[in-house]
Length: 249
Image (cartoon, rainbow, N blue to C red; front, side, top):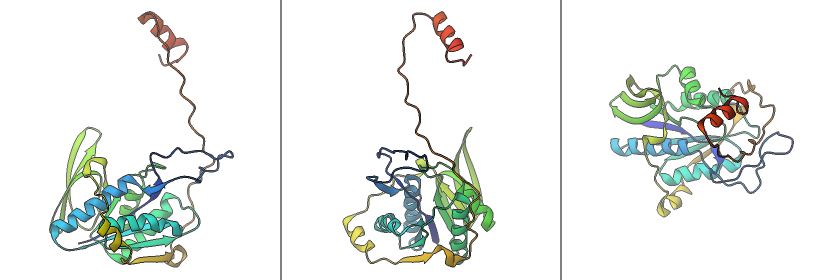
């Protein structure tokens, strides 16, 4: 079983994010960067599948600048076998990212593309679905449990109304949800081994993929500061405030 795991570099959830004065993006100075938590769960699940089957290969892929190698090395230290950095100096939108991953998947021919359901920076929740459509593969989103038997896969996914169990043949695209597993920490031996594991550096232009953006972010703005609450003396006063001030009833 060969499993391809896309990895995105995102700000640490504990980092305080500052929007640039012109609204063109976020200030990146003094920001700690980590693997997107949902992608980290995807790496862990890929490793568990490999360990359960007793053989296989877990390949990481990331699309970004040279500095993104740091997060790929972290994934390699967790236990992944090799990594691919598709290098680009220009940020790509979700459609272009999906096209790049689909192209690499076509070349690598994995049995599963395992990806986090969304990235915590833009929360688009689009790339996994786009990859499945481009490859013409079955997909299972929001996976909370995965079982593989031969070339068949069964996934329990979290839906709005509860849990849904679906089965499909491989190859397929699976997006990992929060409750799928608890990612392992990279051990010291794993960190040492990661330094010697293969990490290919491929210029994005060499893939022959259409990178023309379909989405443009006009401006970013920090959320307004939350106003302090206040107490009301009665239910009647609460209803009046909700009606005249909050205008929600």
